[in-house]
Length: 286
Length: 286
Image (cartoon, rainbow over all chains, first blue to last red; front, side, top):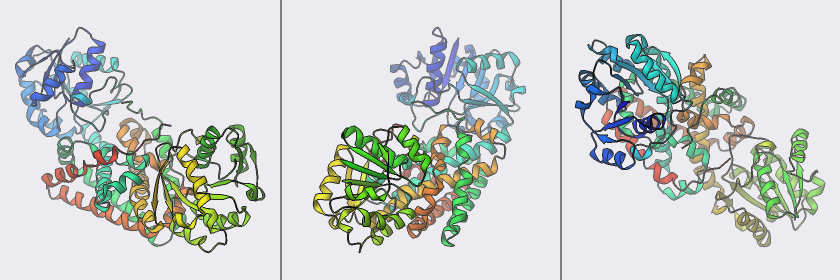
């Protein structure tokens, strides 16, 4: 199998590692705008060689894991360069604009719009880990627009990586993911900001913060290069979720101010249901 | 050593387990308003026997781990019942009102106001784990009001449990902890509420949520019985931190609405410093 990974960081690098494990004979070519990332990926044995878009014509599978703003520019060029029998899949955290930008491309049938719900707060080739995708959900959009035999090739690979497949339309994906992913990142970033602003002396945070705080602000370590364009592309849904979140915080604050502690209790008690909901979410053992 | 643990859940149970490991000859008596918790603690071997306040007179160490509203009522009664050579320590997440309520107690010198920054989102005796306190910070308030030899006894135990000791006044504790602990719980509870409200079909959350979401809402599993009185007692600081948090979220939302994505990037980039800050926080391996 000729696999080309465009964007060889945490997501692309982990995909390459799993692919190599499943297909030891796979030849993996890495493409990245960062030379140092490519060198690092080579040293780490994540890729077999560096390449450019010229290699796309003979690729069986192209996995594109670059920021979603770059995807808007590169995806059409990538499709221009691939062969008739190449399947191109992305890993973007937004789907609406990305499906739109390639919708009328003559090689639309070569593209499978994907969003594997997997990752960590780290980035770069050194953050790539084995088994990142195991047990994780991979959302596929507009599957009917992809050539059937290319769907099959992609799905076989996903199944070998033990991913759970879910089909959605891009609009539903972007709306839902704003709540369960994009909003979490904003709440985490702003929590980190609030505490840092207050605790000018970081030593105090260090001493008083426990694992609960660490867990809640973990996502504030995430890459702004990756997340800014996601928020830009999914602005409408993100703002809506953010507005509802702020409203819930305001309500909670008002209950405190009004000494309505029975209601404060109920707010938390009702949300404890999250225990059952979360039971099904596989954690990344990194 | 005669150790009495009042409130034999996650915090008290874990304390008892470590104490038994360090002092195999220790006799541990459990007191709890829940008979079933006491029976469970006995079955699990966390305590040697059940007891009541009559046993306090002959105790060397009394560890009180009950909700902070119960502490306000029970702590004076506990001090009434203890012997001259007994040291009583609490584990409350607030310190101001608790130090106040016993300030003029004739046995104030027998009390050491503590807050070990340790825990998980679970509760009850079955949630008790070994080594919960290892490497964690234990904040001690008004240490000068505790009899010196009783301080020594308590500190020896804390050191054997490998806790890091930090001395603060109750007001500073309550202000700082509102930011690094209490606020995290509210942000997490309200994030959970926002997503649950939106996703009436929980199957969608289950499918789309990743480990990032799981980490950010983990604290929303916490016990409302424990947290409602904490928010009540630390209301002023909690509301202040919540207001600043909401303001930061509003600012972020406005940047999105105004398409100021360079500023959105900067907001996240500045908060990435949290990486370095968090490096020092020991995680609970449960």
